[in-house]
Image (cartoon, rainbow, N blue to C red; front, side):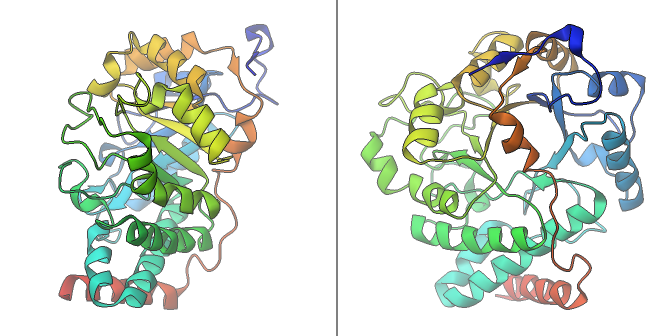
Length: 352
């Protein structure tokens, strides 16, 4: 049920987080940024490498984002490791997920322990800077097709992906951070890169359920806080890409899989999403399909248009889901022993 938020009641206190997550151009906030962050449709900020110069600067930027509005906007980043790690030196260079899968072939227990340790380290480093969560882990199963996934996936077998991602998520949770799995219901079975074009997966639902959906089911059972749907069209099942499909988001994910976390769209500026119409039309389609929040990056005019289009959009059920993505109490963020164990695990992965 959507309740229209009355723009005449846009008081600062008591407003919910809005359904839009957007990006910033630089390492600080300018007057335009401040104005946009106070817009009632905004609920969060995604950070990129361009927003990071050094830890003290990023901590100050996160503090400024939080202080810009009393709702304490969510702050997120893609900090998977490997090719997709926005904040690098002096933060720890994290291994790609596939390295845990390679270790699993030799020693399954050691691989799970390494994934748990590195998950904790990633989350502890981000939390110390003021970031709420990372768009990770990748739950796609590598099938030798998708170059955009490749070594971002833990393994080629869904059971192994689920096992290693579960251990990684356990480490993240122990640092007081929520996880955001992607790309539901699985991006590993297509060749095309959704950043550049709309991929099509023609497999029937039973094939996806036996293979790609298994890691998502497993992590939903472990209480993962958010999921990101794929900009992939599963043409034998629904005509729209998953992130714009009420079948995938409402009927299957909310209904059959009983997922009660937040659903956050992939970037609406990606080529795979452009066929959905104007930026505002894409955002409305994603929200109507079941997303709690939409992501718009690298297009400030589009971000402004989306904010205006959904300025009075408020779904009561979304508020607690999004609020749970804020940083929680963790155990030992500055624990030297845990840090040393994580660094040792990374060293062992590299030497293996």
